[in-house]
Image 1 (cartoon, helix red, strand yellow):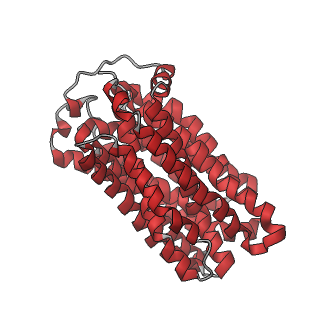
Image 2: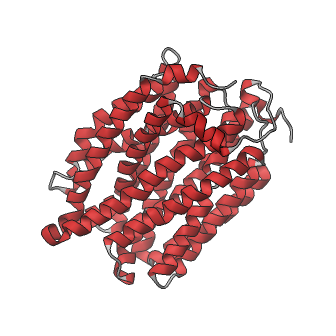
Length: 425
């Protein structure tokens, strides 16, 4: 390993670009199910609760459980190789999802996707923090986090049209296979950065126990509020990403091709603008006051609240879709900021684990409980509201989570300066 390799900005940006593509594939494979689920539901005769389990707890439980030991491995081992292996596993499991014949087989395939995707982000976050200094870290991690929105864009766009012309089974195969090739690109074109490179710090090669990282983060009140805020924001975001297609199809009857295009533009491009712009703006504002790393997502949540409710209150499909634009932009502002803050609160050999712990909380509450809770509430409301039950389930849950998230980001700001000052060297 060449310890000076990433001293060149060009090499660092190339690595960031490749890792962002990897993260995009992570969300293409994950998001694909959302646009296909109405077709899958009809063929496999599933309930909304079962669909919510597929996109929620079944995926999230194994995703977050595998994330902790993989992050421990990443803090001690070669992060580049872990990312390459991870993208191979989740892409392969996505491809074979098109071969399933029943709910149990699809459930097992989605669990496999979750285990694979657990190895993507924590090692990538750690590599990025070693390649970019603290004053550019939120921007770099924000750019990386645009992979969420790029993945959602292509997941909706490709999934919608592939499903309309070829069916949902072909869509899984077409999306999964290119990821296997991407694993080769990661393995043979990226290098493992030296830990502490961006800060000119010497690395202590001794691994840090998981309980030490957990104890350190949990002792910081800013982190506790920030993690809870991010989890509530993720609850709303994953609920919207996983159920918007079904809501529009059921309430307005739009085809998957047209709908996939709309959602790709709104959630995909809008989310990318929000997450990258949020990191870039926070880095600039935080140069004068570090509290902006959490105040900015708090402000974004307050602004988006009336639009988040309005999506489900109007009775015109295009008005509903247009109202989604502001929440889509605002919903991901927190991602790069919370990752940058978490890495600044811990030591060099704690960064992958800090990401895994943060994502454990985000995904258990957001990805696990969000889609499942919406599906469960929709089933409970179905006897009264019929096909409109999903509309009212989302109206009840999404604006509530957005408002509570903004409150906790604000509470985090009250402790952030003191906690950053107490971070280990």
